[in-house]
Amino acid sequence: MATKQIIRPAGAPAVLGPYNHAVRTGDLLFCAGQIPLDPATGQLVEGDIKAQTERALLNVKAILEAERLTFAHVVKTTVFLTDLTDFAAMNEVYAKFFTGDYPARTTVQVAALPKGARVEIEVVAHY
Image (cartoon, rainbow, N blue to C red; front, side, top):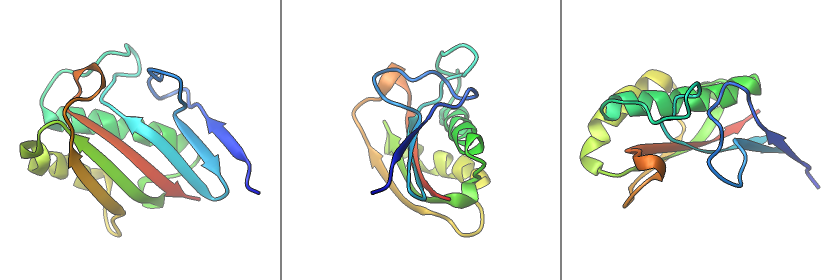
């Protein structure tokens, strides 16, 4: 049976509740959804969906790098948007982080996200 390893990287924003940044089991890393919090202040970044998407993905990157992984190791993402009209602008930023062989992805509209964020992104990566 695979063991569970808790991942708490120093470069990611503090979690907002009773969960961890990521959990490794076997050769998979399950990352909690990241909203656009500035790791230095713990506050939501100012700006449009592009700025928020970039910050959320930089937070994902901090988790991946703590495990010596890159976006190339990501096999699945889920993107939560509070407004699907932001899809194209989010996609534009997303494409700068994921290049080449893209992971599988689901994008859904939700009623609300923590701290009033407009986007949240979670990933599953393979070691």
